[in-house]
Image (tube, rainbow, N blue to C red):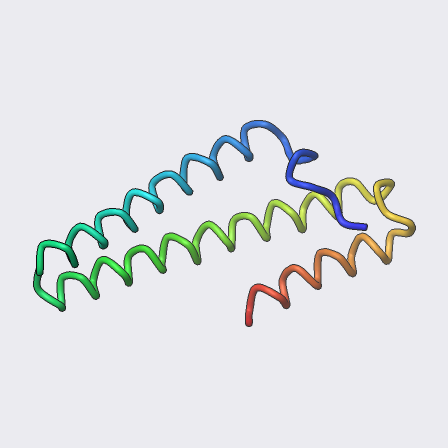
Length: 95
């Protein structure tokens, strides 16, 4: 069983939430641009920026989760299970 986000430190959770709020704002901005009939290239640039923000958040969350797995092996059946969970998260993110 893998740990839940509630087991991560509060600072990490707060940072993830704040970044998600910014991404949410970007998505609303893209919707507004479409509603206003803005230039396609400008919209595509904003979509790329939102995608980059999501990729960065994903990478940071994977790093935090992998470090959690390695630093809290007692939360898993075995040390190998902790490493396996970290590796699965890393591999899953590459899809």
